[in-house]
Image 1: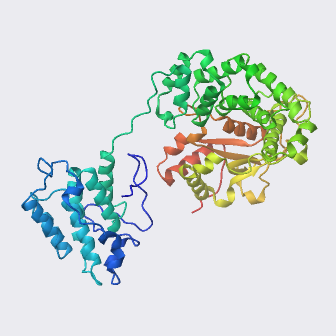
Image 2: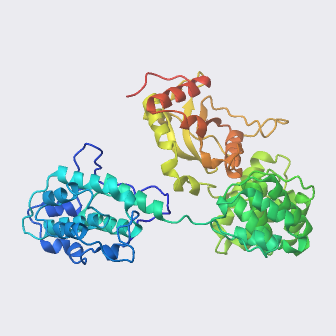
Image 3: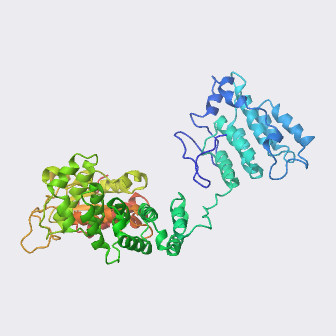
Length: 549
């Protein structure tokens, strides 16, 4: 039989459209597409139950012993009343008769009788051109009998009952299917955690653990212990790259492990190529962690100077990580903005992604490095940095609060007073953008230019680049959703890409209003969320007309 997908303990499959679930005391009704509905129609025929009718008769010997010992010692079949009841079930002439035989003989009913009853029910429904009408109470009572007794079923009996119930069209989210599926999962042996070979040394044990797909479930202390037990010669670049990728992928901001990677990079500087270094520095930018290792930045600058012309994409990837850490080396920027480097990457397969990264680096130079006097990316080479929501947001959109926040703003302000998912120059996607007058009134977005100029208008001599000036009397307020996956795991530190976006939007002159996931998750329903948004907006001094809707 085909088992439902999913690991043991995973939630039951989501109900399909039109399925109904009968609770205790409620009549059971099949889904519109279920086989049982077809059988109950006037056009039912035996051919439509061919999959069910071709099943061999269910015998006690093929179902295996039940939990309570359905067979006598020696494996022989029960004689007398038990076999007699099976014959009565197999010869029942109506669903009601089936139910009577099961309900009136509780001491004679065994686990294997319930698959017999389900199979006979299918035969009764499919053996005549016009099947007899079946009362919903009869089906519900049969379901309740099976649900009440399925804890005594063995795993094979549960599988057979599940298969027959599916063929009969019982809804996947109904009480019968849920109870059988729960018992099936309960009987599956738990998967043991991956065991590491005791003979492996520290570095080998670390590599074996990191290569295991279920390693995230293992305690992080095991990582630290394996790393501490490894001898220096056992920590190869391959092992350290696996460690760096594991930390970055699972957003694990573990200082001890990150410091170990930084120390390895410094010690092994001469043996590492830029293609390996880009993978080792990835978690530092992603996790927004600047290591304490004093030689970390000088080491990277030497590697960039040595390898920049060999691997252009790796060079730009390293600079992207350093951009998130606000540690861009001027010498490397001179090289990647040089005409020779730009011309070199123009004809390569990764030209677009390199141009996007160079555009972000140029934005960082414009906003964060007022002392830089070297070459810049030509305007004709610039492309939008992030023209659409990031991949992680698109992948987790069903878990996001964006839809309910949008509905709250629509009812609170009116849909003409905000813009959603608007990309502002130089290419940052905003969650929600409001235009606000100098007096604090929220203005219709269509009457205003929602974009602030980029590059920002020149600042007076001596004014810091972090204090941009704007002559536009209207303010732009950006509501920033801070979802759970925007942070490092088990921490309150924003991921590097998120921190970079918020930092740059603030430097461009946008007023940011963060909406943390803890506050959003604590709102119970739309009325509470509207009240929360009202308080947030009023705290900024914003005002608007009566609520829409």
